[in-house]
Amino acid sequence: MQRNSVNKVLLVGRTGSDADVRFTTKGMAIANISLATTEARKDTKGEFQDSTEWHRVVIFGKMAEFTENYVKKGALVYIEGRLQTRSWDDKEEKRHFMTEVVAEKLTMLGGWKKGKDDKTPAAVAVTEGEGEGEGEGEEEVPF
Image (cartoon, helix red, strand yellow):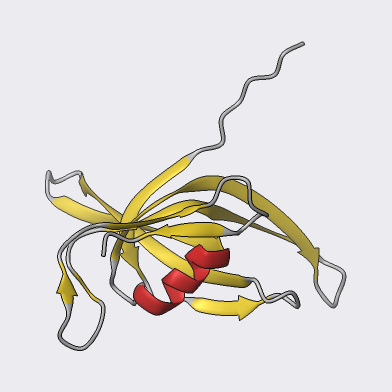
């Protein structure tokens, strides 16, 4: 029996804070960001109301290092990745679950500041590298 399935997430939104970055014992960077996506919907009176959904995004390797250095609170980004649910038990042995987006591609949209006065008005994409270990990637920076 053939099993065909797709686990693909595409998000465009604004970051809720600077990246929270940690390193594994082997030195690989892992970044966590929160991403807000907002949709305008009409209410019962016909007026538009914003509805915001928050997403937890985890980023590995070189993409995580790029995120730490360049993706700041309020940045508009495009994220491409997959959903992953993990579980853990707390001190009282209660099981908890968390679903997050594992980023495979991150693209900064619009203008962004590289340094104090340096502005680059191009989209910058960073993707997970092919043929490398999980979370390792290559930066595709156009400068």
